[in-house]
Image 1: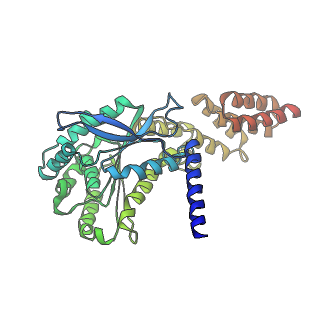
Image 2 (image 1 turned 180 degrees about the horizontal axis):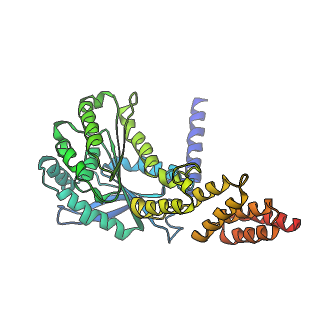
Image 3 (image 1 turned 120 degrees about the horizontal axis):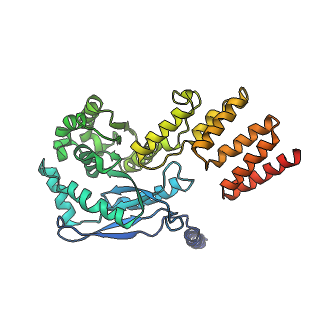
Length: 385
């Protein structure tokens, strides 16, 4: 009986695996990106997993996440696939890139950075070779994340301090900081205080596990240095995952870090927020700043504008209509705003206007769900006219 049960489980697992891959619910098969450089003794094969929509959306460009640990690829690709499959929420679809295992040349560059304070050949390789190769081979949108655990977390901090413009966001889980590893502790105060330019993000974490005990004193010192010296150019989060296992740390840091990195993309401004209370122009300006300075790709203001308009639909319909009209003027493709505007006009007995904007909403979207919803709504407006 036990043997039969085991065989049934194996069969079910095999069937599920085949079905799941057929439905594209698992990450795509990794590719290899061969990178050659005079800084390396031999070419290096970086592993790359493309997002689920990469092949079907030929005009879309993507975020890039780089991690220097070869064993991180599986969990990062899996987490990205899961956390992005629901409309890119909370993780925008991302190209995952990890380093080869045991590459002597890369190891030598990292060793030089650890032992020689002014040696930045590792950063030269990242800036002049690896990142351009990724951009040349794949459709990237310019937003980059450097992810790391233990020693590689230290290299996230090292890169942030010495060449912050290489990445937009840095995740450092359980960094090695004792013995002035990669000179992070020695350089942090001065280089944080001198940081300028576009905003950068840092998520740094640790826990009280046995393996991290030797790092906690320096972690506390670095936290104090960051709080005392970070300029407005650095948005940072520092978190302790006490009571959790050591090998769980990169999973937790990645999940929390990703949520924080893309929070401004997904978080709708509340109607009573400081920005929204200033009106449509202030909301549009806020999202323009996010798009141009923080992310480098378009972050739509639509949902926050709709939220503001909806807050007036009952108390001041004319105000709601005005906000919707301003929204459509600024974002002509905002079909959700057109649909909402039609609803307000209908509530005011203005059927001709309601029909006009419901038709517009229907024309602006090719999504089957919304098309079906808007057709039904349009039919009701036409029947009542």
